[in-house]
Image (cartoon, rainbow, N blue to C red):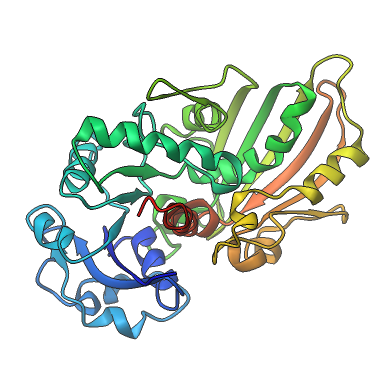
Length: 360
C-alpha cells in the first residue's frame, strides 16, 4: 500500500487530537498538515494545542512543529498538500456542510467525524464492518459535485457503536424493534473533568440531538443504495434515551430487543453469531480493524468501562449480560470506546477502507 499524505481539519479539538495521535505510527498514513480556526492559524501545533492537550499519550513529535493552517482561508493551500483530510470541526452545521463540500470540490476527499452530512442522500455514512458497500454512492456524489477525486464520506454517531454492531448480525431473525439507553462519557462532549467539573459525581439525563441520532442513523446504515441515493431501512424501530455520565471515555448501552414471532433465536445462537461475525474490515485486514469485532463476556459484571473500553486498541465492541426479558425477548449490555471506535478510530478505519477500495 502506498503512503498517503493526510491532513486533519479541526486538529486542535479533542477528536482532532485523537486523529493526530492515531496517525503517529500509521502504516499507510502520514500526517502532513493540520488546520483549525483562525485563532490557531500561524502557530505551531504545539503552541496551538499544547495548553489543552487532552490525550493520555504525549503529543507526537512529528506534529509539534507543523504550522497550523486556517481551515477556511487556507482551504486551497491545504487541499494541495495532501491526498485526503479527516475533518472534526466545531462549527454550525450549515458552515460544516459548506466547508466539507468546498474541500471536496477542491478535489480533496473528506472523511468526516461531523454529523452535518450524515443525512445527505449521496454521502455514505459507513461502519466498515456493517455497510462497506455504501461507498459505491461516491460515484453519484462526484457527478453531483463535478469532481474527479473529491468526495465526502462520514462516520456515524459515536454512541451507535455500542449497540448497532451487536444488533446487525441478528437482523436475519426478523429483529422488529429495540429499546436503547446509552450512558455516554464526557469526552463525547469534547470535555475532560478538569474542564467540566460539574460532571464529577453527576449524571445528566439529556444530550442535545443524541436521541434522534440514536434512533434514525442505524436505519441509514442498514439502508440500500438506489438511483444515486441511500434509502434508509424501515426497521427495526428503535427508541432511545441518552445520558451523560461521569466517566472520561467509553459509551455504554442497555439494549432490549424484540424479534418476529417464530424467528426468535436462542441465547446460544446469538452468542455464536456474535463470535463468528466478521465484516469487510476484517476480511481486508485493514490496519485499524480489530481481529475479533464483537467480544462477549460471560461474567455478570462485564463489560466495564475502565476494564474493557480499550479492548483491541479501543476498536472492538464489548458485550455482556445477554438474558431473557419479561417484555422484550432479550436484553444485553454493550460498550465501545467513543473517541476511538466511535470517533477518530472509526474515521481512520473508514479511510483505510476507502484506500483499499481505490476511492482515495
